[in-house]
Image (cartoon, rainbow, N blue to C red; front, side):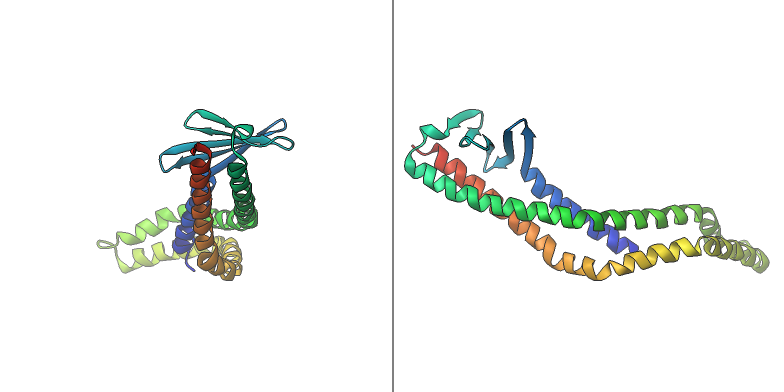
Length: 201
């Protein structure tokens, strides 16, 4: 997998994960836990609860207390909350699993980019050789080779590190991106159902 392909994959994966995490962002203050969901079919939803009380819902600024809901609504919501908790756990597990891998890839890619930037003057010089003699061209090529030898060890180390992750990256590309999108869709579906149940009278 080439460096540009790696960068595209990283960008795609991170964008997908960020989109999922933006859809459902959590904050914790003291013993109160809040879950904020972005617009769900035009509705903004925030769920606030702690370890002892039932959740309170805020939909488009309107507050809905658990005790104000019917037993049927409460039963439906309890099932949905259990299902959402499973999806949230999957999402955070993906995030935790991928964090060190992405950090390693980004670090190695950055190291290679730094070396390539250092070699830029010599490489650019080779692009403008129309009016140069063969001797001048050879001298410029030797300068590039000298820079490559100078950084050969770190380039090789970074390349090997990227290759070691290649199998994992291919599996992630095949499975995780699709799974993350499925989780986002499932969470959005659950959130829409919560809005529907809470607001029904």
